[in-house]
Length: 256
Image 1 (cartoon, rainbow, N blue to C red):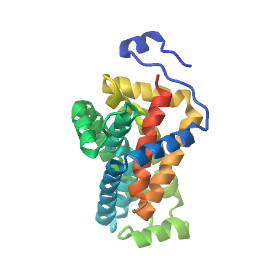
Image 2: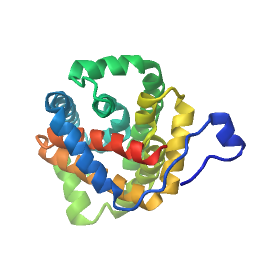
Image 3: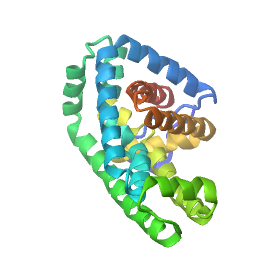
Image 4: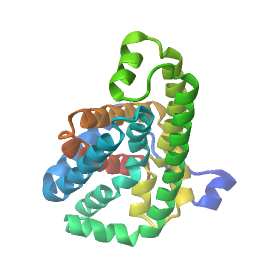
């Protein structure tokens, strides 16, 4: 077990973080499924909200490829805050407390200030990523960007957009990796204890660093399941609440 040490830890009063084995993400999914099953109406309420938001994103950005790609990838960035209500359901469920949709909203109001600060940080990142996405399209995308049909044709079939794809993945992946490291357990931590946003973000980055391989697998699972959710839309009603509950158990496993 990794113990806090040094001046930085004393200043932020960081909690201990645990080293976990590489198969733990599958245990988090199993526990998340149990939470969702035991609190189905509340969990599905959030799933319906996520599906509605996903449908709006797809409908708004369908004819605008640069907004479409930025919006889909941006959904990954804001997910930790969007799932805060699900963390509250799991927190209450762990304690044997009522965990209805309304109860989860009361929990959100209790931690509104910290969630607002962290949400503002993610919103800033999202806006920056949208501008970067537009620059990447203007600089490297060679084809017609007036519709998704021609965009997917150029990206997946013609090979003419290879440099665009490479740069998009490198820059977008780097931003996503940083945000994931800072947010993997920070929002559940803010919901669970009296701490500040900076301490939660540093603790999250430390937990990811200590368990790099395990958290890389967890990040891949998140990407795959959210992608499946967007592809099916109906699957988003189930898959996103599952990930939210599972992320709570990731936090409980990783942070002492």
